[in-house]
Image (cartoon, rainbow, N blue to C red; front, top):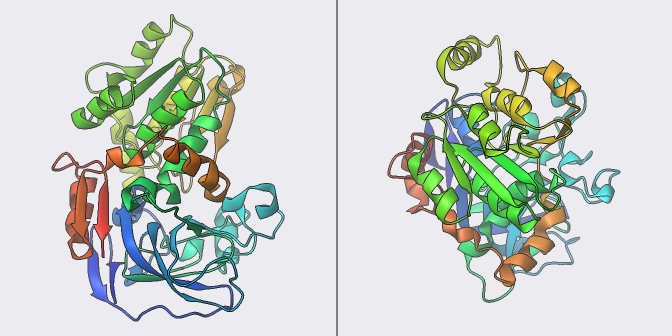
Length: 389
């Protein structure tokens, strides 16, 4: 089969690889019909996720048709059309039983490796390095899905791939980021990053009762989409300091909640941005936390900072004095996708949200290297790439 494989920083190739096989009675083999390039994939593309090996199959946003099942998978049948959550979860451990699906205790065979970095292992992830299990991803023609009796969800008739594909990751990620803010009527929410997750976080904040959402980015087409499609007020941080703008827009108090939808590769400005890039390039700092710093300083006293953007290691110069003395609450983590599948599917069916609005490019699987290039470098007004095997 054809699959998108990592061969080093900025080197994604479409290779011919062996077809996946059932290795466990709880497995399924899925024929991919749609798969997407995620902002998190860019961290691998840019070389910032450790333990990647040349030839690793990437991709964690995918859906398709069941073509083979292990004998213990009773909830699916061959021919079913399904979406697959990006965390791999067993369904039976302490954390899965408490809806903390991305913290599954049993899915990562490389848990001892990640425990050295994080203290405990989170769930395994599709196509996201050997640190998170080494599972082949879904930017491919076929994929093996472990714990298929728990993860995949059947797609109701009448819904297109474009409407439901993002249930696999970025729609629940944006929604959980907003839910973590404990939004109350009248709240003002500030969101850094108007990429796909940021767009869904904007819509989710409004769905959960925010009165105003202020979106921060520098890419004109992303700011335009946030304003015209999602109803946000917007700040271009290359034109105005977001901290000062947020003070003015909130009467000096600051937003009630701040969402960082950017993560470890934030585009910093001035001396601070230069400092982070230099330290990251020589591995004295693993992540560039410019947005995280801004969110802490901007948030009102007693407010919440919600992290949806991925962080991987160790951060420098975090203003913890501000966070402590303002009594901020931090909420973060990989998304518990399984928890949100049914509620968000219901919202899609009810017409409350149509996730397909973020798609700017449909490309064949063979064009994946081009898709990575335009997504990373903001070419062709690219916001979201969907690949079709």
